Image (cartoon, rainbow over all chains, first blue to last red):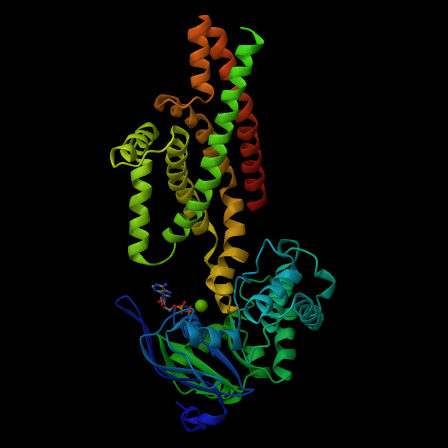
Length: 256
Length: 213
Ligand SMILES: Nc1ncnc2c1ncn2[C@@H]1O[C@H](COP(=O)(O)OP(=O)(O)O)[C@@H](O)[C@H]1O
Ligand SMILES: [Mg+2]
């Protein structure tokens, strides 16, 4: 394993996980996870299905609780009490495989809800922000529609805009293109690439290796709940160190 | 049967409507609390409310009304028949609606809760803005079905001496000895209240089934 993560000074770390372990009952889903993500850094997290990628990123905004170790987000220690969980969630946006838009609200209302409730923005401020971000994901003309009236790719772009409306410091993506028809994958990846160019700190669980090559500063490979290998994409793809990584890359690349 | 007798039935009808409304409105408020407690994730609270629901679903409404009416009197609380019946119906409705809404809350996809949490929405906003509007929609057919049961259930209030529609019918029938006519009209009055609700509930159910396909 490269030791970039352990030598990176704490001060500029946006996310740091130290010795994090998690169990579902008797089953250990995460083993001694140590990751440091610097401000503006883009991480691609990959690994076979069931290796714990979702569990890992869901610990960062406490959608899953962890039993050992420490997590810091933007200087805040993520404990298990509501106050720190709340503080961290306001700084961390998340995009899900299944979009999880609110089906009973319009696109605009989806984007306005959290800024109004969690950040106490006025309706006008929230609407201004929402329209601006819908513009940015190129979907402003759909603002008054309901999610069910949009294509999968459009829904996922709305989900990205909805998360950005909180002005998060970090964005987490959990296989954002896996549920999409192939022809819609690109529009979502392009949106993510734009976001990366603007300097957002990102952790993306994805098997889109083209995206990883283009955007990632580091690729982290997980298997059986542990980090097996991490390296810059060029090195990761051309010179994987571990047998499991090679096997995984062989499978992934032959599929695409 | 003359107009006076019919008017008497209508007064009874008025009380049936009032009892149903009180039972439904107060029962809804309490039932919402039950449903939230039932889905709170706090084991003790969940078990307590599960027991509450089991008791009211596992015993006859008539017995529940008796217990409130005579039970309260027995421990020295003297209340009117209508108040006792209202309390009884409210408790009964709260258990049934609580259970219906618990199911509906749990039927809202987990991703909705996760997305709301990820957006830093607190419990109140998560429920009020995201989960309950969707749960209410899911539960509407069952909720209307229960309202129909409740309207018919108010007839049991006659047994503790409360003059709602059924008891009014009974009194008139004893006066004019035309039970078939009287109870025929009583039945039609119940039917006029319940049938449109049943049809509306079935309509919503079809609409919901179509939209989730
Ligand atoms: N809620 C849960 N309860 C029990 N086991 C779970 C739960 N969620 C995930 N797991 C298990 O944890 C492991 C990691 O899951 P996950 O993080 O979803 O993997 P990935 O996202 O890499 O496919 C899997 O073996 C999965 O079966
Ligand atoms: Mg996953």
